[in-house]
Image (cartoon, rainbow, N blue to C red; front, side, top):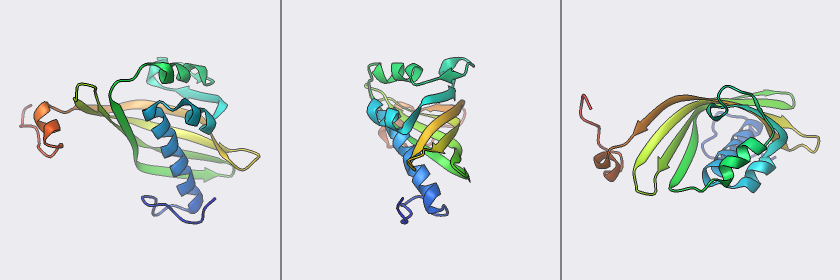
Length: 160
């Protein structure tokens, strides 16, 4: 573990910053469809509650692999807004609002938000593994062509 706290992680201990970096690597792997990185960061017994599972607890990685194998069009970028990190011995909880910015193949843009809690556990070899997450929708905004073409610097007209 590095003793240097990375940019964007001020106010966190070195171990909390390490977890935030791992969590961002996980989100980047999801956004880019990088199954190898995702599987390396996750425990084989990963469990999840997420909208795609329609209220069911999903055990293992198989359910998630389906989404990595699907053909992708456009791009996505995720960031965890206002993260909270709690260390409890060899376990840690990271929670916050995950903002997902998407651009379709046709160029339209949208931002969605979800409340997300991820649980990480330190393995016997000292590395952290993602073991559980819970994700719930929190909002969605689709940008109009005028806003998207201006770089998002225009406000939609009142009443739109």
